[in-house]
Image (tube, rainbow, N blue to C red):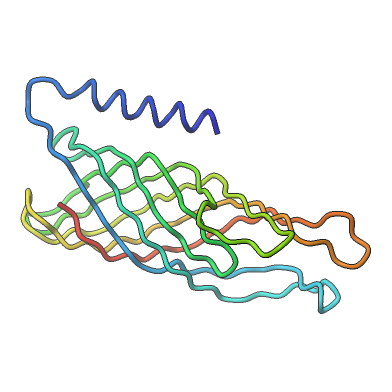
Length: 192
């Protein structure tokens, strides 16, 4: 946790140090969409046999940062991911980079890395959900004139960890799960 806090502090301080004579351009990229994946888990009610289900979850995030140069922007990404059994709030350092394209259509790359917190998650009695590390790389397309608002569509891979302490069953002394959410994220958004 301390390493992530130091990384974010270093990122913010390096961005603020680079703001010298020229005007600083603020960048915002707000998106919403779905997280899609398949989950394999043991079902204790079916003799601990493996069960596989398809899962769809809602995701919302906003990237706020500064334009470093014509193609690169760096900042902080805040989000909310509604999984079936966990509500996680990732906070990450993020980078957006324009890869190629014409004036009105741009292909861009995106990378976010940080930590997801369970601040807004409400656990049942005896359970405790904690967040974990998160990484979210991907590509997207931006449609709109440079320097003004643009619509975006992004396809990313999201890996997010969580630790859940559960109420023990029958003769168990403790019960927990270390979860890793591996999801394909499809998001629509607006960028300016």
